[in-house]
Length: 194
Image 1 (cartoon, rainbow, N blue to C red):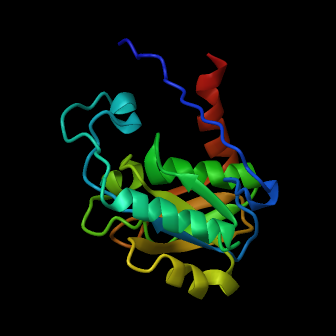
Image 2: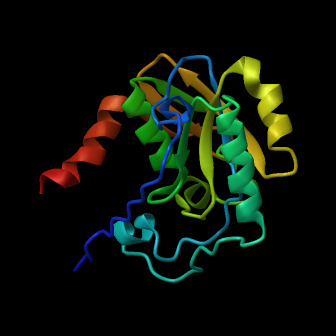
């Protein structure tokens, strides 16, 4: 099997006040986690398909009408100080993004929903549908965030916890994923050692 090299795309931009920047690492136990954006049943070309050698399906496509609205509203919410951390759901989807946020911040996450209503667990956890983000929000900012993002696809996923683990419930209410931060960090770092 030949796995093509990973493509890295970087961007730079002027930031007038670095205090308004939001990083991906989880910040504080008790904060809530939300999914912003729509998960679709499109796994073709995904990291999941690469590691499982699966084929077929639909390629994820951006919603060109929704994306600008979502980006503008998220930018305003960040500028207003409503978002503590934020991570895109690109390579690996929701499960990988939440794991990266957790081990980067040294905190755990309990997600009682994967936000993929009507989708099977594998798709909801690993789809790479574009224009999706996991947001960490203080409980005191929840009402303001929900108002700021009204009319956009926003689902409460769960919360940040002090325990060093990530748990994500599947559609049946059982834990589909339950792993320690050490396990997740090792799984993420091991391929880099090759």
